[in-house]
Length: 186
Picture 1 (cartoon, rainbow, N blue to C red):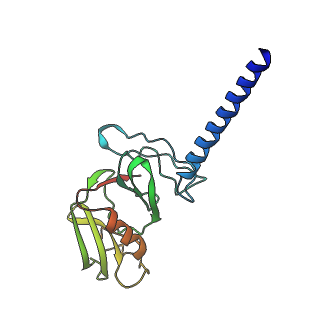
Picture 2 (picture 1 turned 30 degrees about the vertical axis):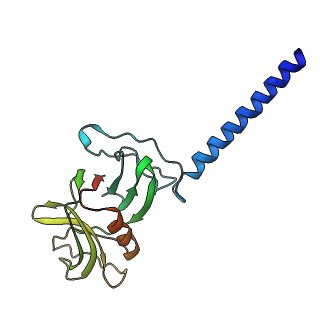
């Protein structure tokens, strides 16, 4: 009987090790390339985004405190955007070049979009995704229509365009339709 008990225990131990290995593989496989481990989701009270601690080893990792559910997360301190799908999964992250007017920290929704217009700086832009207005300046994401070169905004002009590369602008355009939530964090 003792040999049977040790065989059962060995079998159960092997099965447990297999399950733990499988779960570890699944956890690793769901992390987007280059982002490292994701912090746990924990939205802040009242739907307002708060200053989120940064993962200094993985600067493109989604900050904790950036909300839950499908959304666009924009960090005004890091000049970075995350497109977040269901299950707190980062679909894409990229750096941006903000204008001279930042949106206040908080929760917004995409209110309008334009395929192609001229920006307040006179540059033709495309895939414009707008989400708020600050002191009469419209704030939104956009990409240059003809090149990825983004000139530094004139400090004397109030501009609200948050410029992306053309490829990132395409991704934003496909993801952020009217009504999509935008979380602005520090």
